Length: 314
Image 1: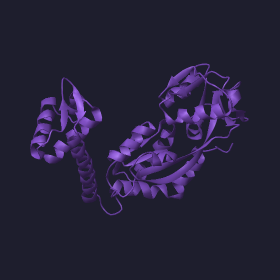
Image 2: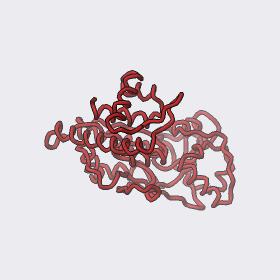
Image 3: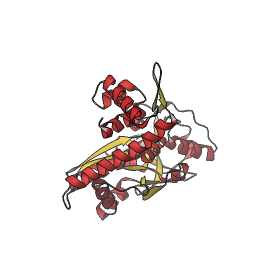
Image 4: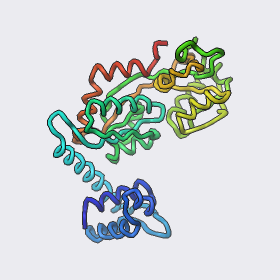
């Protein structure tokens, strides 16, 4: 039995919650995955997966084996990167994720990191806050960009690198296209914005809870015209339709080339949200993660954050 491979199959099963999809993700057949898990159960003398007509979850013992599997795979990747990397030339995979409204910032960061270190292969994923926090807890993520105010919600200890204080804007079609780029208009109150047909993220997204609370604070109740879990839809709904959207500065900065749009700073109340990178505290970093954390501290990256997020000079 290849212990490390079997542990990888177990992690895939927990992630996909389905034997067939887990096998497909691991590029093996379903019988091969099932046989590997049975060998793992025989090795430790416990039942790991509950089996019925469909996958029914892990047993208590299976959860313990899973936690060990996650640590083993993480340490294996750290070791491989240490062996393959040369001094000053890190290489390896770096798995990163961001909440949807922060994905433009993470995309810029990944591009800059890969430019500085061509041997690093960043994976850039979009996740809800809950998925992001679970990824950090299970070590399936190396680095996450999200709401650092939520760090206390899990038992796992996280370390944060604050990036920006996000401000919020009402994005709408401009009466007349601007000459060059999207225009930042005059501030608008949340109560007035609530009167517009709005495209908002779905209620399971933390951004939506921030927006809903802002409307409540302004004494307004909103029934969205469109709900979505896609930030692309938030923007294209405004571009192609008659709706408006509420976006943080990082998302507004990503559509500055759309000169037919305008963004109005939202006030009364003025809502600000700290956004930062997070890792699990006390975990030995890989060479790729060390390079990413070093990049976070550079003036070059800090200038990018200042230019493409926050209040945008409004």
